[in-house]
Image (tube, rainbow, N blue to C red; front, top):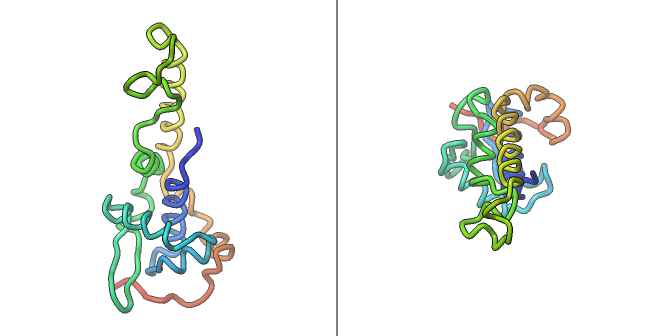
Length: 152
């Protein structure tokens, strides 16, 4: 199953924030670290904030941070939230994608099972699990400089 760019960027933002959970980050800082347009990240961060994954603080000294501990954020939940309902093939659409064999096809069930297995694996991992190598991530993301804003 291929994830959308929106989901990819959402996960990247969360990993970035989990790398240094004691500080706030800016969209510009995250964009520079990953080489991603701040316009794209603004939409992602807005969604993550609306859904309760991150919290944002406006104004001087503001920025964004995880809304909760990385161990409470399940990767499967984030992917479901950003991807929507899993539709591994056109036959999962309301009109069954116009497939001639949709009424008797057994492949649809196999694909649904595979999608469920995909999410089952993602559900086993938290943001904490995928960001335990904080020092390595910080080095790659160039987070060695002093924090811009510390969390209260």
